Length: 80
Image (cartoon, rainbow, N blue to C red):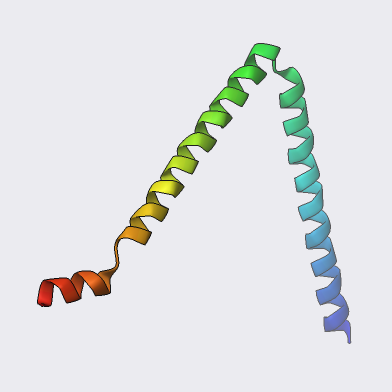
């Protein structure tokens, strides 16, 4: 019974520490965001929009590539 209680206490302590670290990171991030100037925020938003655009283009390209290439058809065509 003690082992189970110790295990549960350690598990609860680990979870508590994890939440404390997460809150600390969140607070640090909030301070960072508050320290940014309006121009910095605009630059970050522009960079984010560009990153999303690039990811979308990559996704569309890979989607089109996977739809256009059918290995079975390519194998059948080459062996006929």
